[in-house]
Amino acid sequence: MSLVIIGSLAFDTIETPFGRKERIIGGSGTYCSLAASFFTQSKIVGVVGEDFPDETIEFLKGKKIDLKGLEVRPGKSFFWEGHYGEDPNKRTTIKTEPNVYEDFRPQLPPDYKKDETVFLANIDPDQQDEILTQVLQPRLIAMDTINLWINQKRDSLLKVLEKVDLYFANDEEVRLLIGEKNLIKAGKKILDRGPSFVVIKKGEHGALVLGKDFVFGVPAHPCEEVIDPTGAGDSFAGGFLGYLDKMNSFDDQSEIRRAAVYGSVLASFVIEDFGINRFNTLTMKEIQDRFDQFRKLVSF
Ligand code: AMP
Image 1: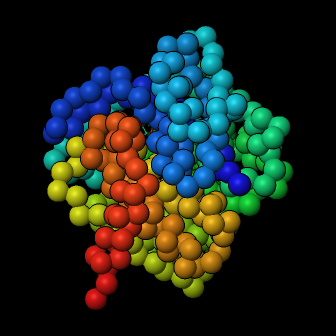
Image 2: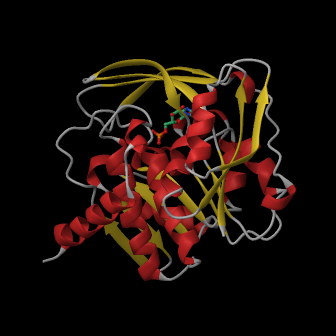
């Protein structure tokens, strides 16, 4: 069992009320694969430039992440800059430089094509679609996206949405995509387009999981200090999908609920430090302890 993640590996410059970090390691694929690696074998499909540090490659390999699908190309790695104010749920994208992602045609290594859980993390929807033509017998396909693609490539995005089983989005993205303010109504409209589940992330207010005749609300861990919210969404997806892949269970509602709690737990850790730093020390015991705290948080 494994989780194939098609996403970005990037340099990020991030400014939050806790400081500014220049060109630290980020990327949707990086965060998701690290979070999922606590539960299952993560496999990354992506591209980096020759400037991407060897230490990061070694760090990912040290976490037993399979990098057969990672290309190294002449040129510069993906770069993104984002700023956050006092409200960690609101961020402003200052710059996006796709660089080697500009003309990336993702290729699945032959042994990634069968029996996989697939996550189309945030990249160009045309690149996400390209991958869907290559997977043979996926057990579950999930996707994520951001406002940029909803605004710039709406039709391509809607085409991908029809082909996936699970869609991760935040509240703002769902409203933008569907044009409906009420999240339950918006979520149902997404389900009508094809996915069996939609996970609507609401930052520090937790997440809603909607399925046909199924709604589950998971809180966010009550963090006192959010140092850097970057990667929370991708880590949520990594925890969620990594857990489901490990359990080999994709429609049992109890497992979906547990997966959502693991997603929320992983997101709550990553925001405690800048970039992927928290993954340097994070242990399965800490994850399990916080999972148990969630039980206490919602029990009444
Ligand atoms: P999240 O905070 O979970 O939405 O993920 C943030 C990560 O997404 C950052 O590390 C960025 O490098 C990456 N990212 C931002 N914009 C894009 C984009 N257009 N395509 C791919 N990855 C992106």
